[in-house]
Image (cartoon, rainbow, N blue to C red; front, top):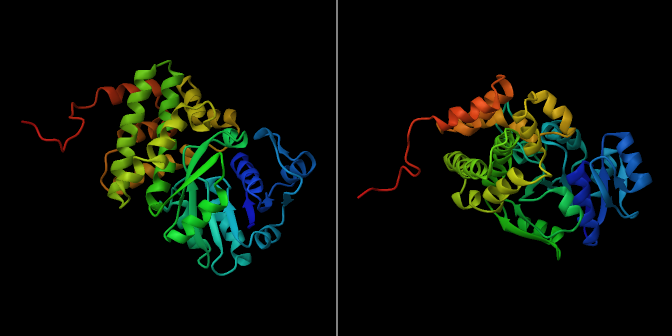
Length: 337
């Protein structure tokens, strides 16, 4: 049995807390929001963000960060939305012991620094050891114990295998990987592509369009990741194409939902207000463009998403501009006879 604290009581943090308890671990859940913790204590359910998933009365809930960190001496799972990763990590630092394992389960790239979330955690809490856990997964399905596969990433094999052992069970399979950068880039960039897929759905376009966006989207993601030193295999796997497919296609995807609304004419702000949860792709979109410029990688889909989000361009005009780009070969490195 491990002692684990989940820092963040949103839908994903709540679903993972349920998994951890199911696996026999001692679990504590923290939130900075008093009303949220009160709701969890009284109803043992995240009524607003994960309705229908009941949590055991054995799980502890607290608004005291020091209590949560001391209660998670074997593992801390950082599950706050990506825009709050830095501020939460800074608040955690005074209570974190040397060598403490912190597993990042959110997805995003910080706009002003272009850092991944595990890099932010390590910068703010240098005494900790970091790992990541991601893959094609929605909290709604994990909470219902539907078969799901994730990947645990860390620099050290033994760290990744420890995370694997803590989370894995008969309905949640976990693989391991040393390519943490590739995993985090795939998990973040796919949210931007999912906004485009949602816009296409909102415009009433069909499966042909969706398939093209997914396929060319993974091409953009892979080019950028490779230029940054990540492995191509990672982007071809669960945390790349796998996560992209589920986020572009699922009714549970907040990024696809926000894009759908923008395809129907909503502004970015109106769409985010309607979704009522953090839309990670909006926060990663500008960072993705900045990374493309830094590493000299063309990102036409991500560029058009940025223009719709931040320059008041219509989603329809964005799709049209993608379609009328200069003629190209699909794979420039293939040789002709």
